[in-house]
Image 1 (cartoon, rainbow, N blue to C red):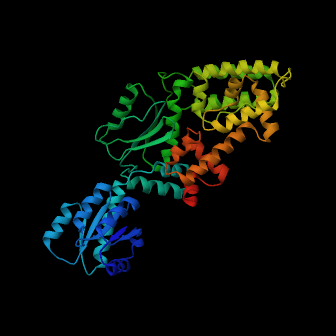
Image 2: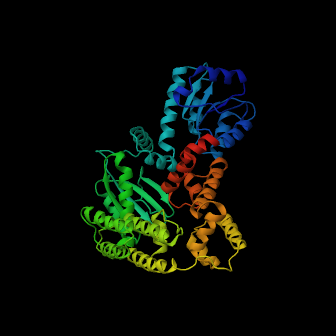
Image 3: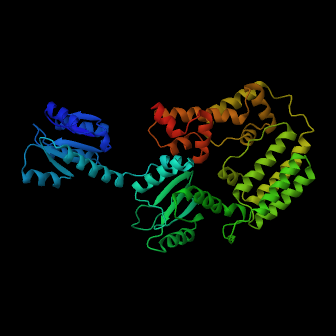
Length: 471
């Protein structure tokens, strides 16, 4: 709220006449002439301005015109001691939402404040970072707040208004149906978007989804929901479905129901073989898993588990630390499909068994080599770095690089990289006026949910809370 009047006592009287906070507003500034008021609008970006209509120099009507050119979203209420219809009409013509007479009537002003609050709630864009944080908060209170925030934006998910949930990966945001309103679109990762499409009139959501698939986009279906509490789960299902192109092929038929028995059995077999360090059994488990992928019985989440579990075993027998993959996108960059991934794991298993019998410390590698590697990592930590990429760049055995990191820094490569990224993310949250999604990407994280979890683990608070406490 910004208060504008050429007489200071009027401003003080207006401040004392109304319980502004009870009406949902906070007074952030005062101005005593039109020129200062325009500058205040530009600097403070108030939601609402109370302004006198008769001021020396620039009057209230001229001020509103110039202020709207600065920020068209600001609302204005005229206050005046002149009960003249012509003034009121001119005020409304330039965009004021109300005309109050002096002396001030608290009930009249409060009614205009409630009107302004309702208008602002309807026009204020959704804060994606806030919505993503609320989706992560699974408590009843978090769900209630999410429901309220979505309803303020015109998104009313319920029995009377079902929404279809979808996720697109690997391309820019998909267009909505022309003229649609109140649809929810969230950027949940690099070139990854979640959509919540109202099925009103009936069939519209199906029409949008069919069009999205025909456009050549990789889109996953999360089904219909009639409850905000089911939104996060629907997004997760849609994301898994979107990655079917990686696990079984884009055009493969979808199973009518998710069969958990086969995946559980296959993964249990692999985990048991790894626990027993039974290499033939691991190979047999991976062969079965490859077949399950081709049959559409395993999804991208299973693929990530298979990869990481096998890598942990390879690290153990090789006395090294290959980096684990923490997002689906990393997996799809490394491998063309799930079958390719399994075949590469088998090959790596064979190579690691042979390599573990050899010395991992070539005589011609000195500490200055690690200094060069460490400098490269410190300068490029926001990029997609891994032990394998460093191995290729410096032409040094990946296992030896892992050992050097642990020996020289006291931390693993992953720990060192995470610390650099988190310190940079903290700096951006304290100083940069960018969205949390953009902060995540600048710090090297393409998946918002993963970044949020890592940040909370590192600092003890979610990114949005950290920003609020340190800005």
